[in-house]
Length: 184
Image (tube, rainbow, N blue to C red; front, side):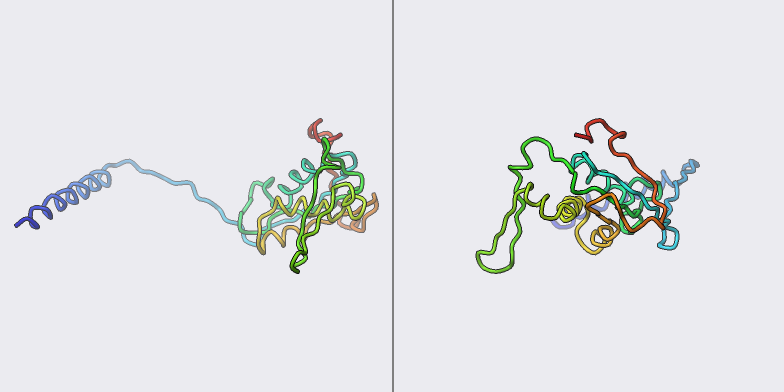
């Protein structure tokens, strides 16, 4: 008997819920939902951009270029597809860091062997290979996994002002004119 009385109130609650759903269904209000379009790989158009990072702050340049590589600046952005554009970065050896980061910032990596932790300061890293430093800054701003690696492959970094991609007719982006905090 005790179990029957415990079951009956639950059945009444369920009946009330179904009745309220029927009331909503019987109303004559028509609700239309907006349709979301999803891109296919064949629909994606990739543009080429060139960015001169001479006297530009590293983090600001990397953040802006990361949005272009991901494709977030486009209207038809799709998070699971590589819909970003190709970016050519020139003058990476003349990039700037704010504050004391040139002397204080340290990059670490591990060789894979016991006791194999290595480090290098930003000043030495910039002198040794500025393209790797810029690529590493951008890699941290892209998603991890196969999609992030594919998007990072659309980045071309050069130390000087000359590059080998004139045939693609890239559009020029001037980061110093976008925000006065970008240049140093």
